[in-house]
Length: 267
Image 1 (cartoon, rainbow, N blue to C red):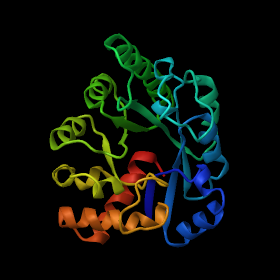
Image 2 (image 1 turned 90 degrees about the vertical axis):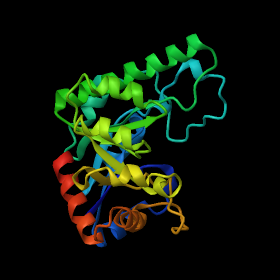
Image 3 (image 1 turned 135 degrees about the vertical axis):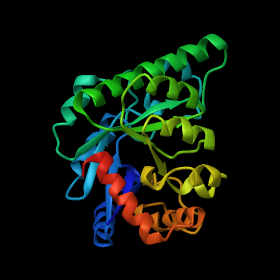
C-alpha cells in the first residue's frame, strides 16, 4: 500500500464522485489522510473516514477571518465559514473520532498580507497565535502536526525550534538550507505535484528517504501529465519523479514512504 498523506476529498470538488473515487483508490492500494482546513471541512473528513481513510483536523491560516485582510477581495473562501479564532475545545471534541491521526492543516502563510508595516506585523502575530494554539492541542494529545508554510520559513523555524513537535512540512517548497534546518527538528517533508512547477531537485536530493511523505494536495497541484482534476490516483507521477531525482527504484520509494507514514501517524 502507498499513502496520500494530504488529500482534500472532503472538499466540494469531490461531491459528485467522492465515494467512487475512494473505492477506486482503496482498490488500487492507495490509503488516504483527508485534511481539514476549518471546522466544517475537518468534520467532513471524519464523516467520510473508514478503514485506511484517516483524518487530520485544523484551521488553515487562509481560513482565519482576519480584520487585516478585509480589503483583499481576491481571497475567496469556498470551504465553509472563516473563523475568528481556533476554538480549542470544539476541535478537541473532534479528536474523539478514532480516524483523527493529526492536527492540521495549520501554520503560517504570508503570501497575501496587508499594506503597512504595523498591519503586517499584527497580521503575522495573529497567525502565529492561532498556530501556537493548534500546536498546544497536538502536544496535549500526542498527535503529529500537518504544517502549511508559505513565505514564512524563518518564523516557522523560530516557533518550532522552541517545541518538541512531530510533524510534516506539507507541500515543501524550501531550499537545501531549509531542508537542513527542519531536519534538525526531526520533521518530515511532504512532496507533491508542486515539484513539477518549481525547481526543487536540489532540496529533494538532500531529504533522506526516511523523511519523505507522499501527498497530492488534491484537488490542487495536478501533475502536468495528469489531465483531470487532481486526485490520489496521480500519486504515481510524484513517486516516479522522486525516483528519478534520487536515483532510487520506485518500489523502494513506495515501501519507505509507507513506513514513514506509519511511523509518523501511527497507522
